[in-house]
Length: 262
Image 1 (tube, rainbow, N blue to C red):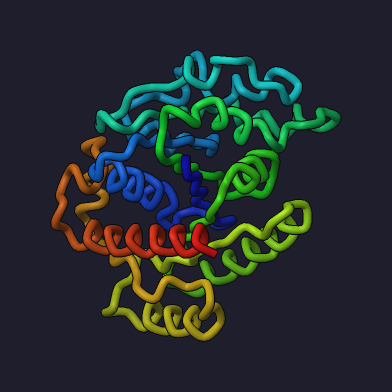
Image 2 (image 1 turned 90 degrees about the vertical axis):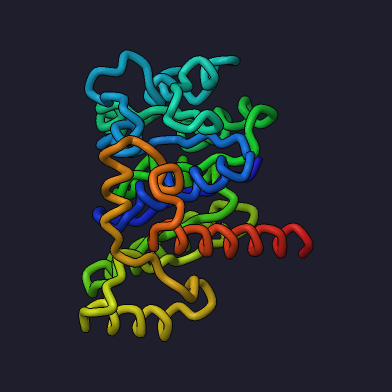
């Protein structure tokens, strides 16, 4: 199983859309994918038609056992999605209470890594949607991940959020045996606006080694897919947004292959 996390410490940058679009394209290619919603807002869970306010069981259950994950629990928590090859580990609003409960409990930072280890044989890829705040949930996402995708809206304030995310990653890497590779993905790009154009130039100047050279354009079809509860590639496989995400996936898979060869 390959594990990717999608994270940024700023909301509204296309994080959930990016996670679902990549998962959908992987599933379209025949891969078995598990998507993990670690955001207490539950956007990914809602996307696939489940109510995070009403769910009796969710990812929160994984954190209730002093850092130990009972055998079989992750599989019991899986929910169906609109795509037959995508299973969902859902979020619930209870996750928002985790930060208050976690002080004094050891081992909570590896709960998701341990959970995915139990699903290792059943899935080819896992894609984690992270919360926009640094805490035990984001630490879990980064600790479980083999590659980090950082969506960045092409506007100035989002670049400030990226700076915080890169600083957080540097801190996390000090506790990892190997630095977590990452890709910065410009999102919500509108070539008609000076803000998008200047921000894209700034990203290319500031992060040349980690920046995906293309971008995800603004595309109302992505929003329409969300309303329909279907992955973007299911909803409209030839939309501008899906074509961009397909190019991004090709880039990420090439990076993955290069890392394996190295």
